[in-house]
Amino acid sequence: MANDRLVAILERLAAYGAEPSGTLHLCELSSELTGTSGASIMLLSDDLARGSLCTTDGIAAYLDDLQFTLGEGPAFETHLEGRVVAAADLAAPERPRWFALTPSAVRAGVRAMFGFPVRIGAVRMGALNLYRDTPGTLSDPQFRDGLLLADVAARTILSVQAGAPPGLVAAELESGANFHLVVHQAAGMVSVQLGVGVTEALVRLRSLAFRSGRAIDDVAGDVVARRLRLSEPEDP
Image (cartoon, rainbow, N blue to C red):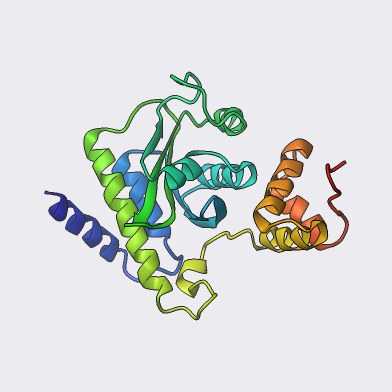
């Protein structure tokens, strides 16, 4: 049964034909088949977000930006724990989670969020994120489709990236993606300035962005342009 469903999903993707916008069709199909309002695929490495491969709409992009800035949310949780994460009602959760992200998500009209690990065996690549503007769980068929779509995403990433030069992201994955390159550049600069690891540097950037109410890309842009220099031990 699972194999038949997988074939049906692959046939749906093939029907799109040539895909100029990277993995966008996979995101669109993920939203459609799971009955959710939107979807995204986020690349992560260990506990660091690398950016979004695709987002179906402005809300999905906003949620990914929030997760990237705050370092929390379903993408991080499902990636680190290797299991599906579901928050069926953000406004009235059974247990509070994602304390920084949830209020902003609810204000944006998001009521439910789900994360499916994008991985093959021990190789973890990120997460398939789904959101819904009404509360509720996924049905069993929707849940199974989410698992299959996350697996398709993982195999697609591996297949496409295999043809890329070492150290570079394949052009097919870059098309339509948002890898927050200025943030990674700023994290490298802060790492050198403060003599800390890149992970800690990114945490510092996230903290400053959250406390100042600014987008992390804007804060990073100021760092790269040398309009802002983070201090030790705390930022002003």
